Image (cartoon, rainbow, N blue to C red; front, side, top):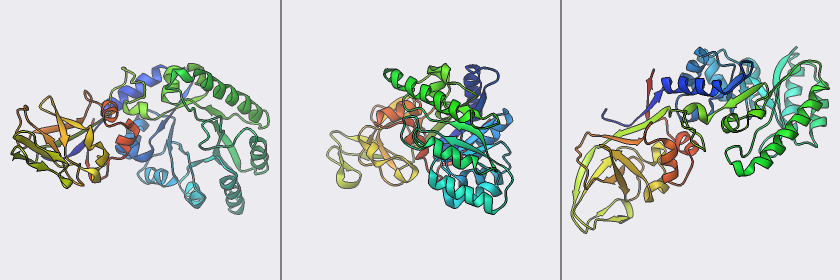
Length: 362
């Protein structure tokens, strides 16, 4: 390897799918979240693998992501978590299931399917139980239900909500209040419709920490990729970001390194130049605390991270030009990396740019 690559281990993905599935009742459905390029990986390869494992549902944030999967042959039902009014036509044309989460979207959706004389369309109703991000609040639900009941083509195949703090056991009281509110509202909704809807609320940490929140289906996102805020040891990291030492520069004591002369050598220093930078998703703000692994040893980033490269201190590390560099992998995982640079794995992974070559391991 003589360049920067992101390895995507589909065997680890299958392992994580099986681990999470083992926590569920046999009748519980499994929705896999593959939004944001599959958490920075490759949403199509992830979706294809999950489809081969008979996943029940996929979920993405926006219709454009669902359209891309459909065009590539994915047949599994796809929930659009945050559909926009402008995407309604594509939702219908590509057989996607929208979340009904606001009156603005709901009213525009109703108008479109009525105008197009569509006989039936599967939708999911989003209830805001306390995350206060997206969804109908308790006081809005009945108005929303009336609008849905007055539009015969809409079939609520799903009723769902999203938990705010299942990874923080200090917030158990709040989480239980969310679950209780969801039970109450969903029961009221079900009493007003003549068919069965799938109830889903639990996320990855909910699956592990709140089995009473399983309902009819669970939604796993970051856990499928091997990460979680509470670092469950049963999961395997799917992604490994690796690069190479492009050049080693010998800097004398007193020399400076990088833009704005942001690092000064206090001794003669071997500087390794690594071809990955903030255009690849390695934020300039990581410069202060970031390190990489070179031949099993930590090499501290020095100077400001540049657009295309970063520099590391190789003193005390037996290394040569062309040697492999590990930003994160299964041993030094992205969760640990994220903590070291004071962010979260979600941000690290989803910031990885398309310029980085993806390599599938299966």
